[in-house]
Length: 99
Image (tube, rainbow, N blue to C red; front, side):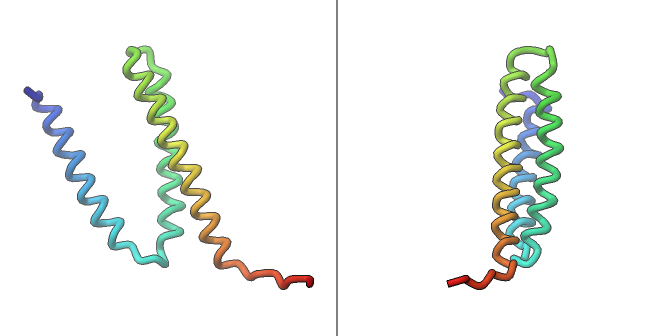
């Protein structure tokens, strides 16, 4: 049977999922790029937290979960910057061809 803290953590996780989905689905396309930049900054903070979690001496599980968190947060940051860069490139003026 689940302990009370585990049930509370699972409830918070499920509520955060639904609230996050509702908030993100209501974002207009014009605000997507600034929101993505803010999300990248938050993921950068997540990487620092994951490094701290992986570097603890609490046990092998915390090291493995910390490493997985580092990998996922890094993929999120790199992917976010690539998407943001591609979106910003769409708004730049194109250079005329020299042909």
